Image 1 (cartoon, rainbow, N blue to C red):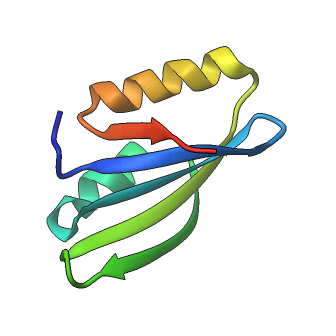
Image 2: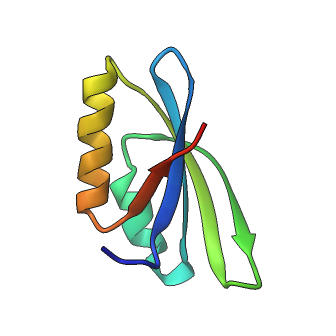
Length: 84
């Protein structure tokens, strides 16, 4: 797992989730390609850490689909934690 790629996800209601990812700017193409089927919500920069932050949103049919997606993201080297 690449410790430079980290994020959190949270439920916003009705099986819809936001994912916020923080990463070095040179990893932007990888992150954008990984979340192509998610809706882009926003972005920001952390100039002290030289990192970019992006937020994506997606609605899932059920909790199992969410869990499968989260596991796939983790398998793709992104450290991801749920927050409430």
